[in-house]
Amino acid sequence: MTQYNKATALDLPPVDPLPEKTQKYFDVCQDKLGMVPNVLVAHAFDIEKLNAFAGLYNSLMLADSGLTKLEREMIAVVVSSINKCFYCLTAHGAAVRELSGDPILGEMMVMNFRSAPLSARHRAMLEFAEKVTKASAEIEEADRAALRAVGFSDRDIWDIANVAAFFNMTNRVASATDMRPNDEYHAQFR
Image (cartoon, rainbow, N blue to C red; front, side, top):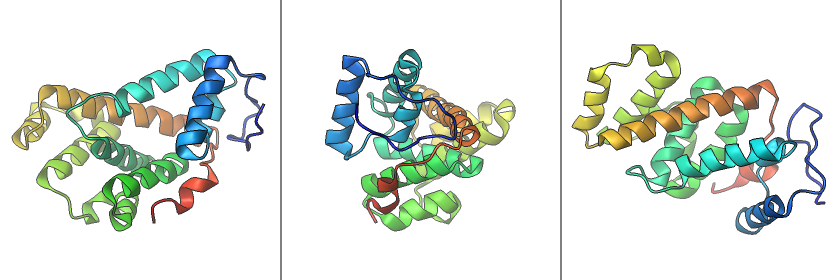
């Protein structure tokens, strides 16, 4: 089995050997990304949980949506910034830099999305994601109406809420386990 850096502060080594399907997934990651993201390695002690995590992530972040991949990554970064999640800020900050082609935007998103030159659409989307993170019980129809006013459909609102909620969950797990981003993320797309 490939040796992986310790992904978390917990002593939960990946299943060895990995099931064939999981190894193929890790091999695809290695080929496409040049690494296996530590978030996957961290989950690999329990293949059922890894599959559930990867399935939900892939559905929310990669499947067809009215949201672009960049918009979904922007949500991930804003939520992670609020939650101060080192892993997700590093990994998804790199994705924003890559997808936008703008390293300055990526850094602004990590630090304070309000400092970035955003469209009204993106500002409304990120303010909604912020409210999902800080005060979801206070969301009301006016918040959804603000999204509709800048062109988001009800399906898009569903996707914004789900991406924000997913990263709130993963931020908490990553922080609680001291999950470490792969070193490669730090220098990417700058």
